[in-house]
Length: 132
Length: 114
Length: 247
Image (tube, rainbow over all chains, first blue to last red; front, top):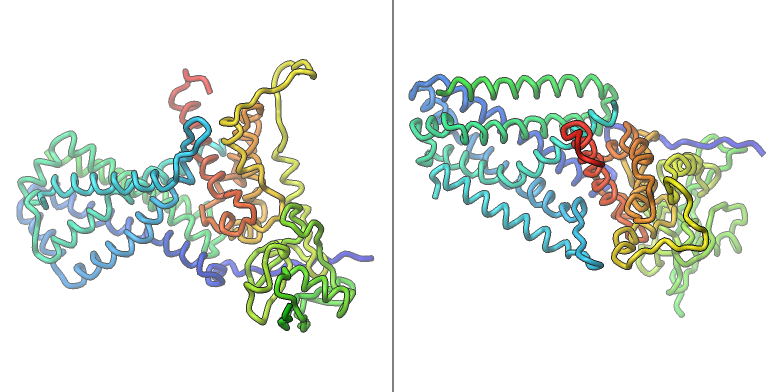
């Protein structure tokens, strides 16, 4: 009796296309591209600010005032909120199970705490920026 | 030590992920407001400079950028691995060097805003 | 009881005759309350005795009958015919070499389980054998979920990181290691940490979460792995930034 185990090939480049859960995962990971873009944006802003001149700062703000940026920021807001924030908060209870005595804190409470924090911090950021 | 590098890199990624999840949507709203022409008061040249001159402001901006940069760098590395790129060490080096440069740039700009 | 005829498209592979696996379709009259495993047994008994596959308890506790059912890693004794469409594709568990038909080679995971030292490790002198290790219900609750693993390997079939890097220790082994780390009777955390915080250990996981989705016993290996990453990170912090602190 001879053994000849067969190894099924797996596509290294397209494995995630085989199931919706893997596609969702890739979309979730791709939010980091948005993070990278905003890092560059904030750095450009800092660079303009560091020049010390009002003109450079105004130029930076003006450079944002294009339809392309409006669409980008709108898209980024929705995509990032869904695939990063909401996804991340949803997974939080898995990473930090809380047990009091022999009862576990319901995951929903941990998720809710994250959303509360999100609201508070967003409000704080809006207040600092003078939005509210 | 293998444990050391991975633990550090992953910790930065995890803290960065939590921070971006909590702060970036609001940040994006602010950018959206700027792009439609409604620049919030706090982002006038005077206020923005004052904020960036304060130590609290500097620490906040550095913290946000530092964590976001390293979060994105590590996650991009994982993405490249997931789409089939085998040269993981090479990609990691490139991305982490870029992240280090970004961090230095951030520190530099924040230092020069007096 | 009404019969429904299902078309089972099964991946067959005879290592002595076939160059590669191929599908063969069987028409199976299924009773309403059947699991898909019953359909496989029907084929074996009535249509094709050469069909090879593993199964045993038929009640989701032994972990033997793991296979791909319409692309989803499943226990064939747990998937019911009433929940399936008329065409059902059955393949051996993904990410494992095929031994024959629906039987896969599980040596890799067996070896990893040995390496991970999945048993209570005690340090120091052995206690009086007639004494007990006391463990409160609360202490048991901490790790009970992770004891439910029946080693069916569905999680490995679902894990893309295991598919891309077979050296990855993988979800079940990590979840079981976590089970022992959380057990108040165990004192082997440091030993396991060295293995599991290594390159092919917990860090290979990118929290896809597919493992937890397919686990038939709700072990939630993904959660176990994230908790291990946090533990290892805190451990690193203590060792490198706060050297005075006890681990």
